[in-house]
Image (cartoon, rainbow over all chains, first blue to last red; front, side):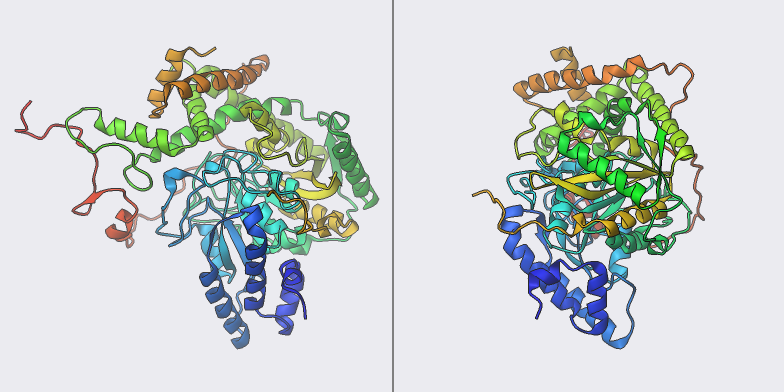
Length: 499
Length: 100
């Protein structure tokens, strides 16, 4: 008999095989994940809402479908979690913010509906930085999440709840959102795989908007092999999102190969590996060598404008956020602070300002202020237009690099997981995303996979590819995974836990 | 360095009511971030067109067909205050005959 904790850490392929053989039921897998949540989440705090009853009901329904032969595909009966940025009909959705506390969406986001239609089992909604603004999950209004490898440290962010849940066996995969690294950075810090798809690959309908020209939904899982079927379900054109692209969705696993002959890889000259902490630099060097061992050829590439990407991002993303978050006005849904007294001609504005002053946390307020400033009269050309011009140059850098190589390799993050409370300066926190932000500005796809450890903490390898080259990206990650065992390591449940 | 007046002006534009000490901290933090952003001035962009989004998107059209709407009570269910099937907000205009 398999222990629940072993069931909870199965790969998707193993879980599917056991389900197909009748050795386990979806309810068994679901109970194993719920047991992991009960045992580990008091110390980790990945979940904001656990939907245990719903999960059991969905799991039993999947087991019935299996018995009568009406299965809906590879995710049928597989337990998952969803970032609290994604609208779930009838289930509280907060974006990690007080301003949405108690909000219950009247409909499902497109990705949520597609996963439920595919038979996936929802364990619950997971923690995140408020409105996805942060790199540590510390800006959540509902308290921070701990890293399963050391709960005194952050899991990264903003999809920190997703990464921590998957790393700790609390679900086989999760969906996160990535505006500047919010899937890839927490995946790196928690030792799992995380994919930011190409802009337009996955519908954004029903995801709470942060920066609409940069946001993209993507999967986090314990291996690249497990990411592929999830992307296959959520990707594709959606009439409800006019930026989703009519590009056919391939069978991503069909591109998997044991070696990487014919693949051209490059490490951008600007990613100066010997300026990284030595253990991270060495892990990236070793990963590059592993790619060559697998048959890939290494080529010289350069991204000269990448050093300006972070500065451009911190004009563009806050500008878009300042417009998107204008909807939180204390009228239609969410928090309301202030009087309904009539008469004063500024009553409406007062109600809105008081609600937003009380309901948004300080990081969200800072970004709204920054965005409003960059768009305001007299500063628009100097900041917003300038940043958009630099964005063009960042995108051109990638286009030129992808004429020479198929995959760019480098670190996902400049450090491993830092301690809760360690990074208090906003600018220092922004620099945590220095390697991931350029991909969002350029709209390309990016993947983080585990490639080593430093002092017991995971190191992430960042792979980037041209738009809609997810098959190449996943093929590269899969082959690396087959040649290494970093993705098979699990956090010790008895590891350092606070208090 | 952003002046306290500039910070207060932006907070007003953004409809954020901030306490005086929060405004002060906000001013210092925004100044630090803008100081980093000023590195963009080193880039010559005189011949570069701006990118608002990455694809050459066109208008996406669909047939103008009526579809069943969400029921009004569902749309109002999350509102902090409703009245007679409507969102309730503070009055912004004096009702006729209200005096003053």
